[in-house]
Length: 338
Ligand code: AMP
Ligand code: MG
Image (cartoon, rainbow, N blue to C red; front, side):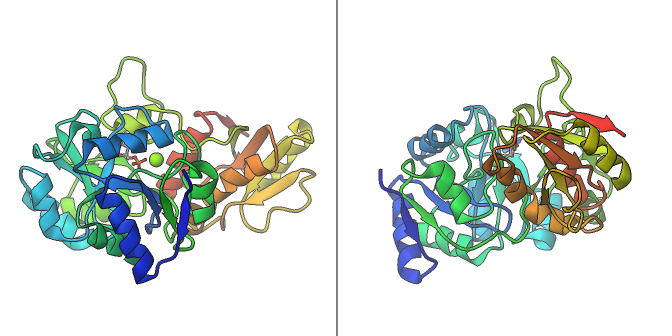
């Protein structure tokens, strides 16, 4: 299949909407990362997403909507807490899980009786959903397990020849996937941190739970509340290790452990004088800038042909929790205390 690269012109968005309506796949920008979209209500179309990504069938997709009424058509009930969340954070990088109606195929929900829904703020994403005239199921548009795509080029690198089209809408603003919260449990529970922080959620909901998979590896035998959390994720080919400690110690560690196939993932301004190739992933005291650059930096590790990447340990406050959550998975939970 020839993958078309589309612009954000009205004509191209209309074309892409047609592709979705007729059961095809389109890569498209959102404010979080690029999504790989299909008609969420068409099980056959959604199955193609899993095939193109190599995604395990039990890992559910997020359904993207552009209007509030679409939400009512997808879920059995919208409790007051959900309404408050939507009012505060939609359109934006927050995904809310509720019980699904029958209209949502089990292919979309990964076999669960619940469905994850989000209204993106990105203009292009919203225009595409409008043009399609149906809710769009879209996971990140990367090959399963690889770092998520934050540019149309990243999508092309992974999906060329596998999907009908990619809309090039430039770089993504937030840079990490949406915050996922479930309202199906008694107490609202954060399943995946993102641009909307736990503190922001608590302002609206009062106390929330944070699923243990956010910080740490699932223990053997524990069922994942968020199926996606059990899979290896966001990884370059190179093995990734987080080094926790001051920059001086980081430098020392690198100088005694690195060889020519090692790269360092550091904060902006720390790239020089390490004796190895270095990639910056944002400013040290600015988690937002780290979120924006993280996935491109992880992809760059492979572009440099490295087999090992040592990474500066991020601050876990605010959006930093999302940065940490992605990095710790890229590192398969390997952290060295310096
Ligand atoms: P992605 O589409 O790649 O951004 O991943 C979506 C994430 O949301 C995965 O971690 C899923 O496990 C999670 N998710 C989606 N739908 C549900 C659901 N119904 N229940 C629990 N987690 C969900
Ligand atoms: Mg993903």
